[in-house]
Amino acid sequence: MCKARLFAAAIGIGLIALPAIAAAQANVAGQAAALPQMAPMNGIFGGANGGSTGSHADVEQQMRAAQRGLNDVDPKVRVEALRKLRDIKDPQANVLLLQSLSDPDARVKIKAIDMLGARQVHDAVPLLSQLLFLRSVEPAVKLHVAAALGRIGDSRGAKPIIEYVSETTDERSRGTAIYALGEIGDPSAIDILSTAATEDSSPMVRHLAQEAIEKINGELPSSNPLKTAKVLVPTDQKLAKLREMDAKLNNFR
Image 1 (tube, rainbow, N blue to C red):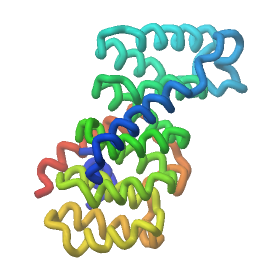
Image 2 (image 1 turned 45 degrees about the vertical axis):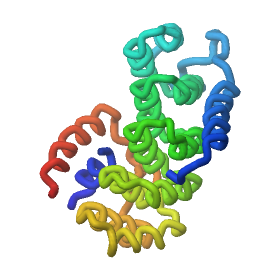
Image 3 (image 1 turned 180 degrees about the vertical axis):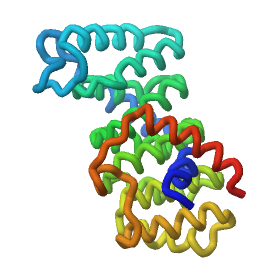
């Protein structure tokens, strides 16, 4: 199976006592609230120092529009506000994405998660990891979290994904998480991957597990751009490939 199909397959909890769940939920929201607030829009965006695309005035305008949209009561407007941050590379845009992880609407959370993964924001790893273990978090959100952790490629994401693989019964979620472990490349995942490669009921998951092991052992390259050719693929191109290969995934079995 080609790497593109594997990534599409990837895109597709320990049972915690109620007091622990409530504490974890409060912790995620609290950490998001404690993130640095948006700095005044005076000379911090754009140009070589800021690293943002477009002119200073254009970036300021985009950031203001995003901030207004994220305060809207309509989740669709908040999702669109996050889209406005797609091409803004200034770290202040990441602050808004991180804060959106505590949004009450799953669509907004998923958009923020996907963008944090695409931008490979390492500061997002602790918050994303916590979302994997909240029983109140929708399964679709957790699937996107696992994929995002794989795209970020931070070894801190390995342990929470390993635990997630052990708990989830959904084939697509297991495939996503196992693919992510291969992308992260942490040797601590070898044991669970070996078990999945030989014992999982899904042929897709077994295949993904075997290739994840080969990635960790250096026998196959990771598709993580920071670990291989260090060539960044434009976001639109990545999304187009995902849509194409998601269709192929439906014909896998």
